[in-house]
Amino acid sequence: MGVSIGVDEPESALWARALERAGLAEEEVRGLRIGHRSLDARRRGASREVRFVVHVDLQLAAGFETDAGGGFREAVRSGRVVARAAPAELACDRRHASLVGARVAVVGAGPAGLFAALTLARSGVHVDLIDRGPVLAERSHALARFLRTRSLDPEANLLFGEGGAGAYSDGKIYTRVDHPLEMPILEELIACGAPADIAYDARAHIGTDRLHRVLPALRARMQAEGVHFHWRTRLEGLVFDAGEGGRRVRALATSIGEMPCDAVVLALGHSARDTFERLLVQGVAFEGKSFQLGVRIEHPQSLIDAGRYGDAALAGRLGAAYYGLRCKSGQGAAAAHSFCMCPGGQIVASVNVPGLLCTNGMSNSRHSSPFANAALVTTLGRRELGDDPFAGVALQEELERRFFEAGGGDYTAPGQRAPDFLAGRISSGIGRSSYSFGLVGERIDALLPERVRDALRHALGRFDRQIPGYAGPEALLVGIESRSASPIRMPRGGEDRLAAGFSNLYPVGEGAGYAGGIMSAAIDGARSAQRLLEVGVARSLRG
Ligand SMILES: Cc1cc2nc3c(=O)[nH]c(=O)nc-3n(C[C@H](O)[C@H](O)[C@H](O)COP(=O)(O)OP(=O)(O)OC[C@H]3O[C@@H](n4cnc5c(N)ncnc54)[C@H](O)[C@@H]3O)c2cc1C
Image (tube, rainbow, N blue to C red):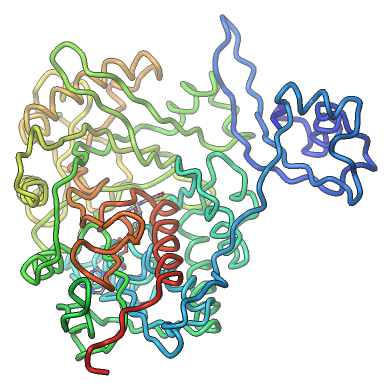
């Protein structure tokens, strides 16, 4: 049921408003839970009244007759109140008999792998979780070293290691995926120290600082449930025996030796290009998919606050403002949109291979930096890339090398002010940015493919009408943003979620091409784990 409250009203005001709207008396309700909360800062005519729109779940008192008359029946009849199903659970009590004594290997400790592993272990399955990177503390040391020396550790960086790609991020966990597994995953994160409002806030985010308390707590919880972690252990190939109804993996070939298994969950993320190549050679199917290319755009946070709230001072009460903008194709330019906006954040070098440059954004929980950044991207698909499944990966790599070299080959990033990007000239004096390795003035408009450049130019003009100054001299483009989505997919066979042609290989998450963020990856991992629990494992022909 939806109600609205002013930004200065206490949450307790929700009780009275929800009861009134549902036509219920206080004694008829056992509890109230916020299901979803979003900020409405839209302009209405000349004025703008900022308020929260809140969806509330009411738990009715025992014995309450739902077909009782009066206001409640009227609220149900009019659609103001709807019945809600009980939330799902991660663990599955329909575990297949073949899983007794079975070992499942999960590859990748990002959200997809972590929640696949937790789902399996909680249902009583032996799980070995391997990741090529280290635990979080060691990973943070490697990153500090990278910042200090500009020397990148290819196995411990912003993409590889405990927590996966989102471990240094804004930790945005809202999603457009409306799935029953979302709530149990959020509850798991809350139990590990994430703030309770992630369960309902439409702009829920955890922030890197808090994520770094949540992830070790999640690891400890998973170990207690029986997950065996193997850090700095890289998957180098699959070892097969032929099973009935498809090829069967009987072990992982890893950097520390062979690891036997009865089924594999592959949760590699989108940047394990070396592993994808190896899997392709071994017969795992891949297909190309559409993905996004563009830049990070950075503004003073105060400019975004003023544009979104109408009054930058409101940020003190409501928090640093967020935006999500999109524009359709027009004037010969493709559609474009903003993505992964980090209020009060920082631009980072999100790379795992020396000699390549790719940007992304992260923030702390308080969104306290004076900068706002977001990806500004357009989508490329089969029409632009052709039929070669790896054409997108090749293009990403070519552009990432081009930007690395244009920056001087030491992770300094090319930067260009928005008016200079529009005019096609180098910026004289880049000014301040949050990007730690520094920027060098470069013609980003000339470094990008024309189609991408034109789409971004078109979008900048449109977005400037929505947020005044968006394309002004304070707007800084930094590049390249090439990995906001995976350009490949490992096709899965329908209901069973198995890799095409395999009887026990489950590709999941962003690297498999079925997720685009922390929550969607976690849900995808947990769903495949549940499926595996239902269908069991094909036993080895060895006996
Ligand atoms: C800087 C940054 C900020 C982001 N911010 C957000 C955000 O705020 N909100 C959001 O929803 N999304 C965000 N994302 C995207 C999000 O992190 C990913 O969509 C998500 O992590 C994908 O989850 P995954 O489990 O599929 O893969 P990943 O998280 O990429 O995890 C894959 C794991 O597999 C491991 N691995 C890879 N190859 C091998 C191998 N051969 N052997 C063993 N292990 C291997 C890697 O070490 C890694 O730990 C951000 C990404 C980045 C880089």
